[in-house]
Image (tube, rainbow, N blue to C red; front, top):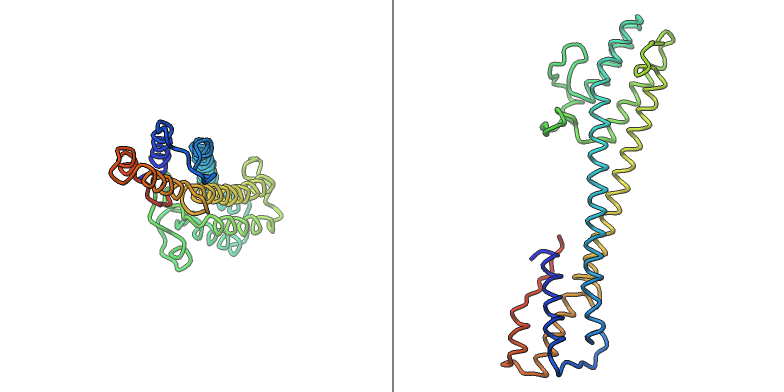
Length: 241
């Protein structure tokens, strides 16, 4: 039973009770004006989860795009280092960072089996071209590449996108993307927690109130009454989706 169906079931419960002439519980949290307000609160909680989930998905998509752009740029940075005659050691260091980030040699783009890359590389997903999922580690590898480039005095490419300033800006952007994912994930978790509290776990949650309403109707109209039989058919299961 989905969360949406749970709300619909509660709305049906309220509608049924509103039509019972003798529905007049002494408990304040079972009175019609109170239970009538619950579906609106529940739908607001569902909407909050939906918005938070959309924000999180956008953040992860934006991050994937940014890191894919970084991955495509890395071999060009290595080539630019070679073009300005950086030392073999420096070029080797840069290539090592590229391998750690992509699992490919910057020169020929063929897969490389190394302990460092094997720890990060996961099966390729559509649209990611083998990009590892450990984005925090990827950002730090790229930071090491930028640091390596910064030690080469003659590295002054005319191409703006290869400049040290642009590489640093890209690094800042990657880190910002990581922060956005962390923050939106936290907001999604909070929204889900608030929804679960309202629906299933907090004192006076929706499901508990529904069951208490059924008990009240059973006590007033009897277990064989049409009123109670109508409510028994409306099920509420405690779930956390």
